Image 1 (cartoon, rainbow, N blue to C red):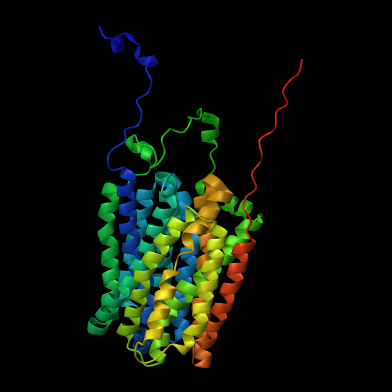
Image 2 (cartoon, rainbow, N blue to C red):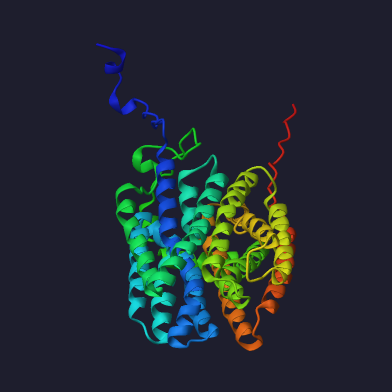
Length: 446
């Protein structure tokens, strides 16, 4: 009889978690990337629909921008609750339902003929669905599956989402010019549905489900004894999201992060993402050309955001944010003078420069949320992202009204440049979280 056979089974040490050559965290990250790409087309489409809807139905820029604003607000408000729902029902279920909801909303728009219908389909259905696939989704995935390379993976997934949003633009612009705006809505809906089977087959909730540790973790976390009474009285997830908002809102770091991220949304999705193409059209640029320029922003966004994730693992996130916002503001102040009928070198330089900074702010913002709010960071970041989308919604609507009233977007670009200075100040005012020093012990003397 061997030594192994003589040891009682109850006293044998638990087998160490297996470490496969390819950690499943990378497969989960790949599925997450596909989900974000599948949802990306929805954020591309409103900028392309503005002129066709104005031509077909006579709706003003302000009316169309209002529907986009509803989408952005609900997108932001859904994010923290989606993070809580992922804890309650699982990432896989929430992702599949959200993608289906977006597909239904996009498909229904082909039958609309009144602004309220666009508000319902594109504003409400797509807004809630895309909010469930917002950056809180990325924060949840990286928080559960990665210990090492967390900042880098956050940067890659964020870049994929934003770049997918912009890279869709030339394809959708071509579809609209060749087959009408309804073809674009149907295309993004089909792309969203195509990702659902992949999510259901491959996405897993936690490494422990497969007997693994998070990527980069070498020792399992100490087990906490189960408390049946505490589990019976567990707080509902929706109430937890509201409680964490109330707690976080009582801290200065939350408002500095939410305020700066609101300006991030205002100066990206709200202004450039929604109004760059119609603004270029005001100067005689063809829509497909303007869409291609935004797609080029997406290409350089990949480089900038991945590099930002790499920097976030190594440098002070506060200083990174300050630099990013100042550079973005400077570029926006120059933009009004760069619009022309054709593409020229100065515009290309702006596109490259702005693309590198498009969502480079996300990895350091998530890192600062983790620093200040710990395990609650995904839900707290959901509320910070809500600020991002509220800022985007206000500027998306406001810039449309500026265009209707003044006949030009110039005031919107200059105002956005000034806002970036405020965002940089918020980032630099945020201090490092103080750490409690260990209590010194005094040796006993005889």
